[in-house]
Length: 118
Image (cartoon, rainbow, N blue to C red; front, side, top):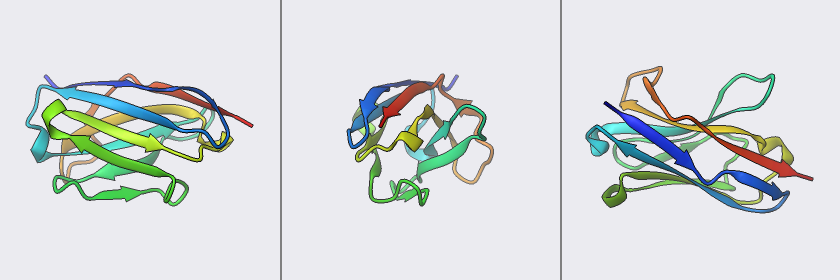
């Protein structure tokens, strides 16, 4: 059974930084694609960053140059380093995973809240 657990959210002022973590278990980590998603109240869920099986990252235009996705294979952990945070980054952040090429992802974490104040 695939399980994902996010942590690292919190409240910061604009311009601050946070690092989100997502610990994964129950599957062969290297064969999956993983990503970070977010959903703000009243808005649709959006993709923030994704990492393919070759550890190549891709980003939403709104976070390019500010966010960095990475993984630590030894710890089975996915990270999202978020710098220069803006109030519009406020949302619940989720990590998700599945076999590369499959969408929508079947496995999701419970989410971690990020709040950025101006």
